[in-house]
Length: 157
Image (cartoon, rainbow, N blue to C red; front, side):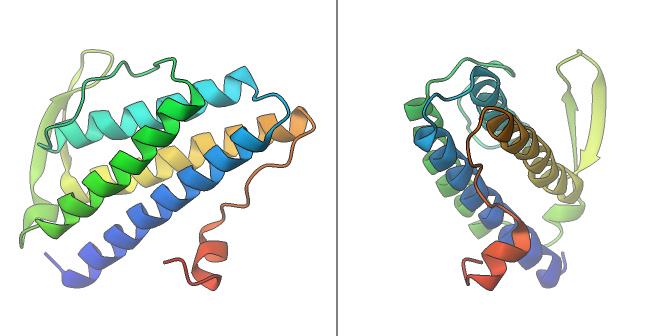
């Protein structure tokens, strides 16, 4: 495993946790939290737990599209950040190149490299946070500014 790649992926997941918390703050600040936004945020959380389990972490079972309250989303985001940090703390040489075999939500078997899974998690969450930002704007609310470069410029990564 290249230490540079592992450090980069850790940074990417630290950003992911920060961006999830910022998005949750914008949902909490909304006069009325759009139902679709909460649905997407709940899915982001559930998907991260699912990928953690596929990576061999003792993760809580959760439906892929659960219905979580904002408080539940917050608690899960806090826990996910802790679990991702622990995952990277125990990452061993070569682990990023290892392959995991799993069944997706359509009951199809797949095999993926750990490095690709971690990259997917961050990109998947970013995609849905974009949907949330758009939904908040449509509802007259101000979404969180969660651009990666914004977090880096502020020294959060």
